[in-house]
Length: 140
Image (cartoon, rainbow, N blue to C red):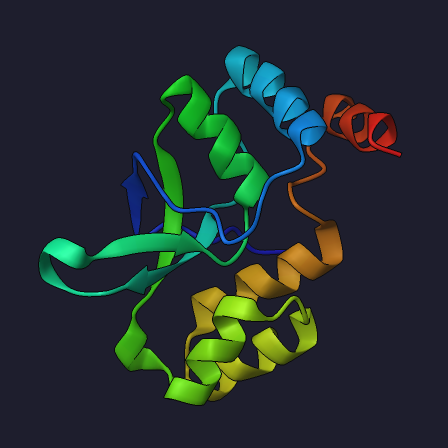
């Protein structure tokens, strides 16, 4: 699996949905010790000018934990003009990884497609250590 390099780092992103508090607590404890590790998250650029903000497509829990600690969040940004209006609404509200992967591939957004593939295959974070596996078990 290839590493996807972030486009940029953000201090704040808007979560697309509420985060599970237990998972955020576990990830916060892990990030406090090790900082951010693993792949960047995928965000959608919403609005323009003074009204522009970034909303999570993936990584709600990781970004919430990072914001709690003040850790910059590595992101890959999807801009509104890169997708049709219909595709854009699906990206913002769909939890269907297969659809999102296909939409990103069709739009030529290879980094976004690779991140969706990794989210689907690996879950919300890399399985880089035994600690990551213990976090997953603690949530079951």
